[in-house]
Amino acid sequence: DAGITQSPRYKITETGRQVTLMCHQTWSHSYMFWYRQDLGHGLRLIYYSAAADITDKGEVPDGYVVSRSKTENFPLTLESATRSQTSVYFCASSTGRAGELFFGEGSRLTVL
Amino acid sequence: GIQVEQSPPDLILQEGANSTLRCNFSDSVNNLQWFHQNPWGQLINLFYIPSGTKQNGRLSATTVATERYSLLYISSSQTTDSGVYFCAVDNYGQNFVFGPGTRLSVLP
Image (cartoon, rainbow over all chains, first blue to last red; front, side):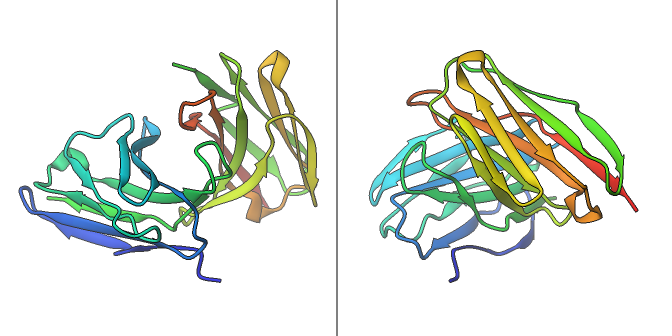
């Protein structure tokens, strides 16, 4: 039971580069979410998706792009990375918008 | 939007002690979850508890939605219980909002 997996787990990049964080779930959950976790701000929602081809903004969407062509995948792209996007990124899935959330292991991104 | 507070912010215990963590929220909620973030950063589901009481081994949780709080009880704490405990609430149609967490350190 693979559950929800994220890749890469660790990434170092430079300002201005494009970075894509991958998220894959095997439960066929309809909802998927991207959160970032920062000291002093806790966990904040970036984007979420209710189904394939349906995405919506969360609390902190600026600088990020998402897509969901298949139910099981929900990649997060930083089109031009900035230092303020240095963070730990968590992908999550659930059966409904307010359903039980299950998290991936996180991706630690450092932007130099 | 809904505000979520957790107390205490930090807690240090000796192994074997019991503890109660509290989550207060400012508005009616549809659902509530408790998570444990272990020292390696993994977020682990503890309880999905919009109301009532649930127990899982040494852990139990109670949510009193009408009074806008939830409690997480940890009995006979172990060093593996160390980490940060988050509650997250869903405010009827909004997405889950996370509290700031309680950092627990269990000393051997």
